[in-house]
Image (cartoon, rainbow, N blue to C red; front, side):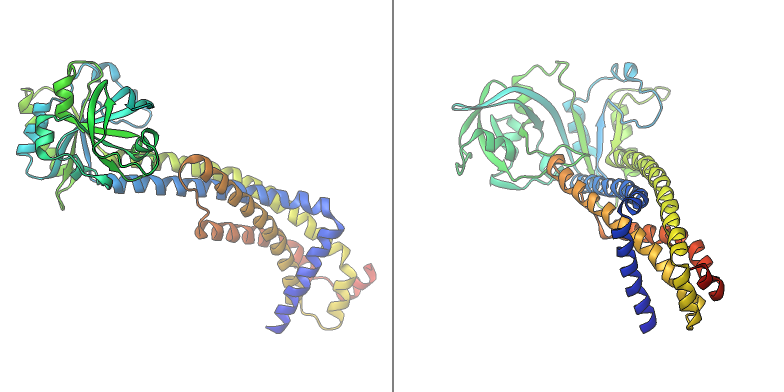
Length: 418
């Protein structure tokens, strides 16, 4: 063990001597490993971070959530038949009430429609192009809402369509001065004056869903009472959360006959509505990430092979330059295995140096990406281990043939070659 430690120690000294003596040659040889590790680990870290963000969005909404609307979510290479889907009728409030009353397998049913308000106003403060979500009574059971101040709509407020609103955190920050309680204040929404009854805590954004940070929630019946519901901008969605233990297929089988009967569709007619699942989007992203991973590995492996040949070249030169030293070591009793390990460790250390630089660059990229993307990119321990294992494998592949050739040298011939 002591001999092995000494070999490693001497190898480190030789490697750094090589770096000092042949800076350009060593830099160019390690550049391939650095680029390869950088490409692979950057892609893996980006995919892992994006998947984690998507999973958090799915968890927030519930992986079993269903969205009933006229537009199906379709992913893949098939042509999206929008010209057929646009002919479908939009979801009606009466259909929402029907599902809410009859759907025994649902934990909660809600209806939501998104509008774009030209502006929100509070005194002199204005928020342009704000998102307004008209929601029904049980929306808070579909989507977990955490309140900074105030409360959710009371059943009477939802039923009667009272002029009350709930502000998302970012909207609240833009409309009101710091440390001002917005609850009880009146603001202008959809060109009408309404009362603020709640402010939501900051949620943060994820790819798969839109958070309420930049939204204003308003009772659905208020919109029905004050707006033209036949407008092309009215295209609501019915959101269904199954009870615990109820699968998506089971609740789909319950939803379908209720809506078909309501719309008086004959047995031969296709559904003129879509039942979409959150997991469909997540699965589609997984397919995209698989392709991105494959491309990253392809580019990275190609770069690593270039680096492998570069390190092998360094090792062959090192063997030739140290032929006399090898002969002397073997003549005083050094075993072939010790000579082999010495050069093999040297190749591995060179490869790991390239790996360290590559991982450092990835770490810098994750910091920059996190500051601009709105969510955190992470260089995980697992990906670091993948980089180290890959670099070690490259070092072994690059150094094994030069190491074997050094170990097999005849000591007399090696000394003469000096």
